[in-house]
Image (cartoon, rainbow, N blue to C red):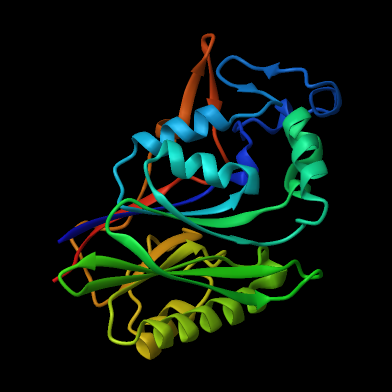
Length: 274
């Protein structure tokens, strides 16, 4: 059985052009679109753009981070997938936050609240668990979504989706969170094959945590030395090397200029499950 997996940090459903000069207070306060010769920075709800890109991509399991909670159910529906959502940080007064995010996404930004969302297109979800990796609020709350997928013929696949603490100053915290996630996910999965991934916020060139993950837990396959986003596996064979999408694949036309979705690019890989 071949299983396609994708991981993407959605940046709370916002765009991120390569030119920082396009991020202006005029745009943030007045929702004015800012343009240069190639790109446009828009301050509006981009659900339809993100949903189309995710739905049209080839995957069986998608691990999404920084997903607006209000997007979770529609994304599952529009992707013809089952869903497992766990909330992360800043989710108090959710209706008010959601309203403000619809009106002005850039002004509220990450204060809309977030979720880790796992979408499943194959089999059925047999079990959902949530692990709090860091309770928050400072550093902010971090969680892991653990999903057991029943594939039929007594085959099961475990998927762990997380977003670790960000920034060089929090590298030690991120390492602790990733190791805790690996310890708990491998224990819950037992002998079953496991995918552990997401925005781990740790580049292999800067951290030896990936050697520990391989040696202690059998989790292998980081994307690249400079990547923050990974789809590690245990008990699976990678048919293709983990691949970050070309940046152009998450860019969309907007009246002759380009909207670039998110500040992360998706990563995908195809596994073989014996």
